[in-house]
Image (cartoon, rainbow, N blue to C red; front, top):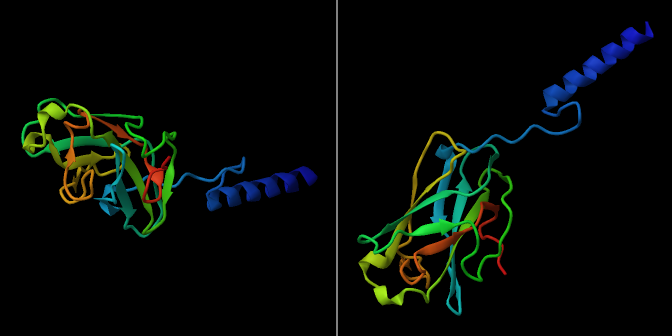
Amino acid sequence: MRIGRLLTVQAIVLMGLVASGASADGSVSPVPRCSSSVLTLHPGRSQAAAGNEGTPIVITNHGTSKCSLSGYPEVVVHTEDSSPRPVVFVHRPRSQIYRAVLPRTVVLAPKGTASFGLSYVDAIDQQYGNGARCQMNAITVRFSQTTPARAFSVSLVANGHDGYGPINSCFAGFILGLTPIVKGSTPPEY
């Protein structure tokens, strides 16, 4: 009889753990991935110091429940005219504005924010000048883990490297750094 009661108690405890979202080992169920339909993106305030530049891209959860994002976004650059060279992003800082951090899962509460940063310098390949083919006026952002698939367009026209115009991708040497998604409206700074 004692074994029967013990098994019944264990079954009740196990059912309680499953109902609460916890597992038998005490871990909690993961927060669901964000739906692209509840997210909005906009540039934050750019920062600059001695040729080092950084622009945060702020992600806001407009849903009614918490959700999660992780890793690096996929970013494509749009210049006003055809760029003289392809613009690429690397998963490391390209200036002294943002410091390197490891990717991790970020939980966004309703109305909560996360961000990722674009970092670059403004003293490389200046022979291309400041014309339309160098001016990054927008980026397209995708998050591989969100559904439905969606491309977010983020305008950089009024928020470039100096806070007043597009980012000059030529002066950045056509290479910009990309931080992983982090909690809050600004990636970790130096």
